[in-house]
Length: 209
Image (cartoon, rainbow, N blue to C red):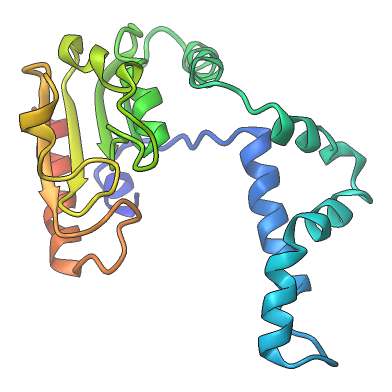
């Protein structure tokens, strides 16, 4: 992000109320339950995992403005719902903007569904979720990728559990889609600094065309 800003790009970060609450809740949970004065670390670790959801629910109770989160967890919004929210965000930025969308995982999937938005020029995705590792193939994840008309650069880990080096041989992809493989997994753990440097250079070249 710092590299893109240094190149003169204006960055707009989209975060839904649900995501913001999840982030706040996780941070509060970690700070509140980081250690116990009375129990051993091993026992406390087991209890934290066992009562994680009830503890988070108790943390939310004193904050009525965040109670909507209970309903969101019980009935999470679909990908289509999220895409509609993003379309409204794009529209709010104005029709004269030239927008590039950068996202990870499910966000990359949503970004691919925004390729028809008139202000979206290019898309950059990290760890596209081609197939959920615990589910059978879902056509809605990939069938539209054969018809994407905007330039779409996907950085995919060779060991990504949502789709690795087999991706270009397994799924029909539009000629506008470029795949760049990295030595990492879906969460980009332990990726080498030298590869991040190459990623930044590839993004700059992609956006400069």
